Amino acid sequence: MKRLECLLICSAAAFAQNALDPAAAEWKSAAPVTLALHRTPPLYPTDAPAALEIPSVQAQIIHSPAGNFVRLEWADKTRDSAVLPKAEHAWQGDHLVTQSAATDRFSDACAVMIPAKPITGDLNPSLQMGDPDHPVHIFVWDGTRGAAVMEASGRETTKRTGQSFPAQAQYAAGKWTVTMQIPDLQAGTPFAVAIWNGSQQDRDGRKYFTIWYRAQ
Figure 1 (cartoon, one colour):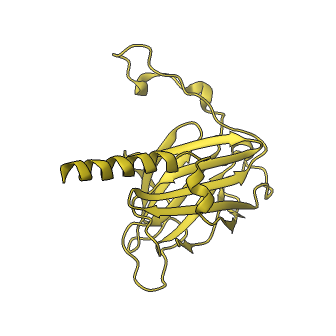
Figure 2 (cartoon, helix red, strand yellow):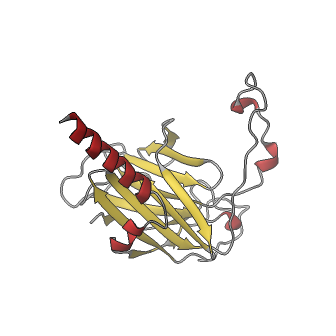
Figure 3 (cartoon, one colour):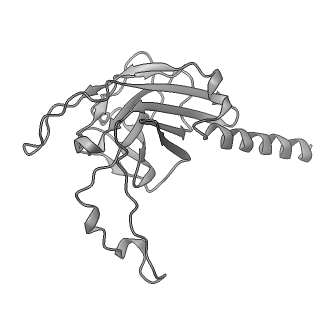
């Protein structure tokens, strides 16, 4: 029995590793869905108007005993990411390393937002980061900072949880492909997608976004 359990665990781990590869064969059997993207209204008076350079994102979802996986693909003419400096000595700590040279850079990024609590009926949380009665979890991948889980319960309430999640990204031929393992994205769960285009100085609430969809 223990050997069977070990085989099942190893098999699930191998599937999870494969599913996180943006080019894995597993994704060929997952039906792609094209989701329309919209621009947020102007937020900062110093920002120039932003054209709709990224009109859509393609989403695929795999549900398996190894977990729930999302694959996002979108066209982007430029790869906007940076490598932040690391601490050179153990006593420094990454939080003490000066990163002022990166303050004028804007990274490409994407996120999947899902309700933090099970949804009953057809009512979805607010697209503006949920609300106090309907909080959300946001799984963010950033081209510079990697993957992070955030939570929110309305506008201007978004905060980091200190948690990460498995994700991989690939930029080739003018396209980003990002895969994520999201534990709570079972079939029927509402989800919304956001994209940030670094070359358009997207950050925070300045972004592309979709309406709510239901995971199939």
